Image 1 (spheres, rainbow, N blue to C red):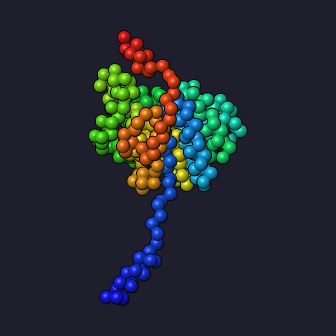
Image 2 (tube, rainbow, N blue to C red):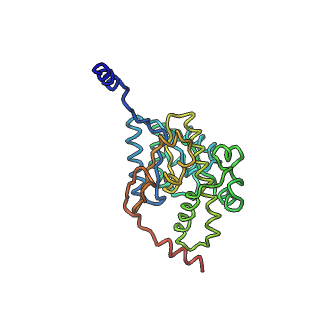
Image 3 (cartoon, rainbow, N blue to C red):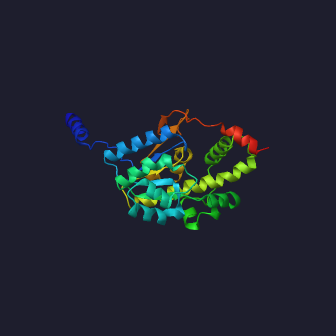
Length: 265
């Protein structure tokens, strides 16, 4: 009996320590127009890179068709203004992203375009994800099966709230296709990035980086387990939405619901 106890103690003493797997995908959210959130996110990214993370930056702010322009800009530009002029879309407030892009250029971090265009999002609303995602992508991410009920319900709620609960439900349901197409394509870019780089950082709106229903739900299980989601929010976040919640001061802005209500009359 004594020998058995000693053997057990030796086994415990010599067992390899449990080491957490390193983060492969770091998902950093945003409220698009919140300057404080942008600054806090860059501070976090800088700290991770200074600690040794060498990621590709996968960005919602560039449509997938822009990758050749983005590659050319990265190879020829020394400053963010040059890159924005060559590859930026007019729909984004680039003053908020300039410090992030300059950091990427200074640290030589690859930049990958991750979004589907507005035109493709509109196609997804009219014809579903099959209108904008090729068959191989749909099969790869399990889109031949019905959409999980929790994702559908959460996306419908998000669309309704984002439009001040003033949209007809039928219209809001069509908009789920656009969000889904974006989430799945971002997941594809992240997975492909990890084939070339040790880590990837997703720069996207908070809705995309939600752990419960966002991009992470479309990642392979092994990658999802080593992903880390950070929400930069102006208020509270529900439990399970993000791994880490960063509350930032609200950005002063006109009431969007008042403006949206006027368009409904």
